[in-house]
Image 1 (cartoon, rainbow, N blue to C red):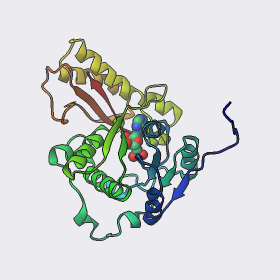
Image 2 (image 1 turned 30 degrees about the vertical axis):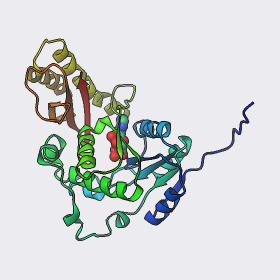
Image 3 (image 1 turned 90 degrees about the horizontal axis):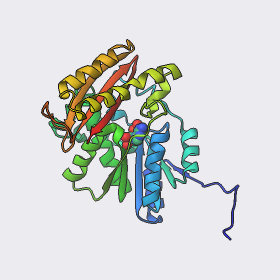
Image 4 (image 1 turned 180 degrees about the vertical axis):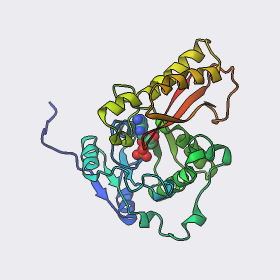
Length: 293
Ligand code: AMP
């Protein structure tokens, strides 16, 4: 009969310095998983951790609110931070290490950092979220490359919720020939359908219910297109009409983009693309997407 130790707690080590994480990695079993996050962990992050645990012998979650990916008027200072809560979640999910370095460790070249920023190709960087978040994807590409260089993971896990980010990462790995396999994990949602996000913490329960209409509008567009009722542009228009009933929601974009490369798709496409939305709910910016298969 297996022994049972009900009070035995999994210990996740919190590691702050590059040298320390390199030391523990040297003694850890492979394959090695890396789950990049900005902390304030929720069910979406947990699904990435579980995918990592299923595939790898050692799992590292990094927690780093990356200054490089925030614009000057964005919420870098207000971004929710909860290291104690994150540690608990990681322990509950048997994570081996949290790596939470200071920005000065990741960007020791402060001052000249600008010269070392990686820019994804224009057709990935300047579309969708990149139109309003000018430094976002270069910030993402730069930080992920640095963490991959430090940790040298075998597998790295990303959520489909941040779809454009995923395409940027795939480009990054190919462009720099990085020896890591990228895993794409499905979007985890609250019971209302609202995609889990650290920024949902900015919303009251009532606001979260209204914000769930983002997903409803995506499902509506998908249904209208798949059933052949409307072509893409008219499907988008119908969804925008649905969202216009909520004065709190200001849509930034609602677009259809090709699954293979996020290029624009012809109006009569019926599948093989995503509908993607970004909207502001008060000061809170939310994104979501749905695949039209
Ligand atoms: P963040 O902490 O927001 O930078 O997100 C870290 C990782 O978690 C990214 O790969 C996200 O795509 C992923 N993620 C965030 N929200 C969700 C979600 N609702 N479902 C699945 N993955 C998610």
